[in-house]
Length: 360
Image 1: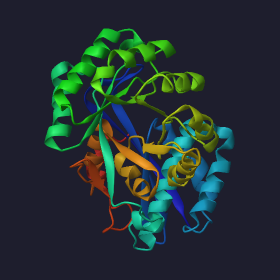
Image 2: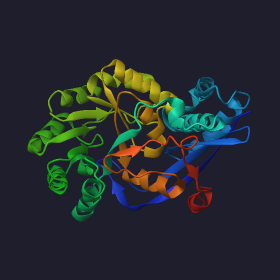
Image 3: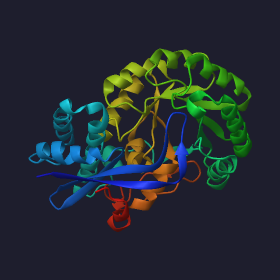
């Protein structure tokens, strides 16, 4: 017998955060626990607390009688159950967290590291530092980037651009110049517009910083504008990336012809089961994939994915996961070590620490 339970935790940011199209002052983590035979697995997603109710009200009742080891069967039943609940969205977040929890449960039941259960391609997973929010002043951006590159040896970093919905390009350009000055000539510089620009506007921005060697241009236009993504990709030197909002395989299949790298988020795409399938879709199109945010949730599957480029070491989520879980690892020298010496994902939830943030 397998049981699923869930709870939500809302954690304030350590400073106001924002990008080109959204601003926020807190982040909600929805934790799912899968229990069977005296063993527990954990998985989580970032999104509305309503995802917890989807787990308890819709997913738990349909998995009770299934074998905890039959993860594909559990995933298939859960996926069918949320068909009419809007699977791309909150229900997809719940499904993803539950799938990650069931994989973790299986690994712990067999006393195996989850990375070993999935099978590793690499033990060190490359990462890039991600933050540089549009809400940061120049000094805060400098400190964050300098700490990643010069303090921790991370050789690739990303900042947010697309200020005010793409309506303050001069500030965007100034921040890109400042970022390059901070990290020096040897580190890779990435930018993320979060879909704030129009097509030709994005091309003009890329042209204006051509001498700064920007390697990665994420969502230069809305990820819903596939033709626009392809147009920008064909006219700029940087790799164009998108895909973080993908909840199912058709999404990634449709997007693959228009980007240079597909982003996949294990907390949205259907969990580990969905991530592995989406990565295969990307590989069939000749693309690498990048794991979007939630770094410690991604770590085991990132270690198991042959065509992985890197994992996003997202400031907000790194901070939250370090607060709420024991066993998180550092990113030094540009990579994070996959857990291969502890059962499951190697993390233990800290209920006492989390209690103050619980959403009731």
